[in-house]
Image (cartoon, rainbow, N blue to C red; front, side):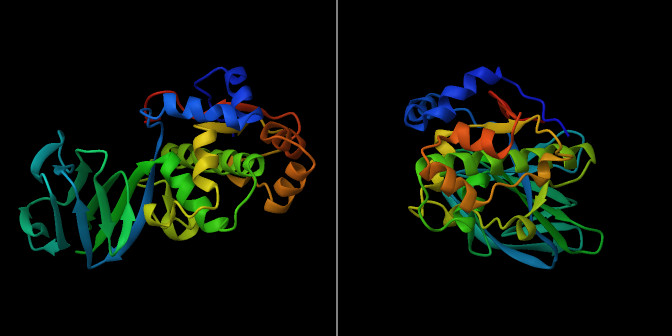
Length: 270
């Protein structure tokens, strides 16, 4: 599968070759959210403890035009569950089977059964009366979370940058693949090892590696049927970095004839 790139490949090379320079690039694009990932947090559950800290709005989604149901300026913490005629989350939402709680401030965060998340939280009441809960979060935050669990020990700047690009590539490819299938979510938290925002900032260098390589992906890998299956072993990235290879060289050594691109410039891929 070929990932369609929304930027000129050559523009990404200096950022990979010299991550120390990409800090300024990251700062310039800090306001750009890029693609988002829809993560299945739970399915077939009777209830969940849903908390929002910060200003928010509740949007109805099971209608032709999304409509505002409620909102608040501080936060809210209640168990959400189904009722005979809809959903209840501290207040009742009659005849509502699909709602999304969205932030209205960059400082707003969500907690589902104690796990912290960025982005938004959607809750669907299935015909069985059980709930499906999905977190839609910026892809950059998702990559940080997954890598923080995978690599808890510090890694060098160049090795970390290469690992971040490969992980982002895999996730982006999977998002595109599942969207083409018309799925309600792109990945599951269980299969991807996603534990939300709370596991980030663990001093392993993961957050910095993602920020040094904003939106960057590998593409056009020869002999690779699907970029979802792209892998870069930690040991190989560390070994090549110890030989003096920068992130760009690590990737070219690991995936000959590959090129680099960006997931998106300004908007979601949807």
